[in-house]
Amino acid sequence: MTAATPTLTGVQLQWSHLFTPYIHNFVQYRTIVNQTLSQTMTDFSTPYVTLPMVFENSHTLEFLVPRSALVDGTHYEFRLGYPFSEYTFYTNTLIAKTFDSNSPFVSNIVTSSTNSSIKMSWIQPEYSDGLLGYKVDILYLVGGNGQLTNPQWNVSTLTLAYSYRLSLTDLSLVQGCGADGVTGCLIPYTTYLVQISVIRESGVDKPKAIYVSTSQTPVEKHDTASIFVYGGRINVNFVSTTAWYNTSTAISSTMFWPAYIASQLGDIQVNLTSSLVTSVAGSNNVTLTLSSIEYSSLVSQVIASNAYSKMTLYFGGNRTLGLSVYCLLIDFFSFSSVVLTNWYRSRWKPL
Image (tube, rainbow, N blue to C red; front, top):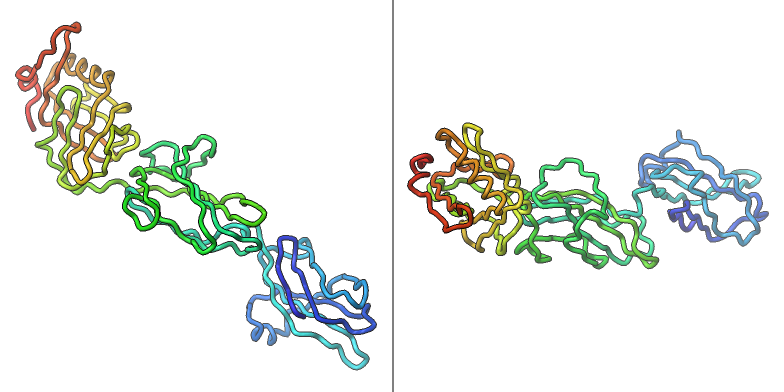
């Protein structure tokens, strides 16, 4: 035999010639566990099965063993035989592994991530006919949902963050701020859907999809003495450098999500769902700007409270920062703004 080639429809067998009369030639196959020829030649216990095929003429030099006659993802050994009067002649044997449902897709996808980047690598598909390259799409739903364990998203509801077409030899991609490869920041602590499609001469195959999350921005310690609320803004001065939000970024897309302000007694709680976050590259200072609704709610709850109670900023799922200085600007009946510094200092003492 000269070839045993797996295809999506079966295994294509080829040979150089037939013995005459040609109708006496036959093809046999058997399943194998060991894939090397040297090991299979010592296997005398696994029987061969004769294919129920008919040679059309003496020039028939190939035959497709249909996929329906084989088991997906299984190694088979094939040989051609002819019964002479004194003995049965067998050709050399060839080994072929049948394709399975995963064969057209990339395999062994390995991912790693930081708070702003994702690194991925893969192995080319087992079925490589007409393979030209790869298409990689990176999508997400909302920022700050890195805790998800088993999302089942409809792609039509997602936002496409980045899309690339890679060559046949490109078997990896790095997406992130300052990472080697492709430049483009990802949102910290956010789940992304990565789709890797095989590009063939016939077009783009269906994608292999995986979910991978960026990590939370590491903050080892913080200086609570520099945290304060002033006129609807919360300034936080971290000791270590934080993520860069060069423009006013929705809090849901930042390391602070989810976030809320609450008092120790429970009489004050304001969820920060529409606040904006701003920081400077290389800086450890971050500003949270409360929306007018959030700020109004905070002011009204402070005024309505009847006893001293320490307030805390809860953020990022499991982090807290005590609010040590309060200075609220309140506009009474749209007249001039009044700074109630002394009044609040008597009610909200520094930590």
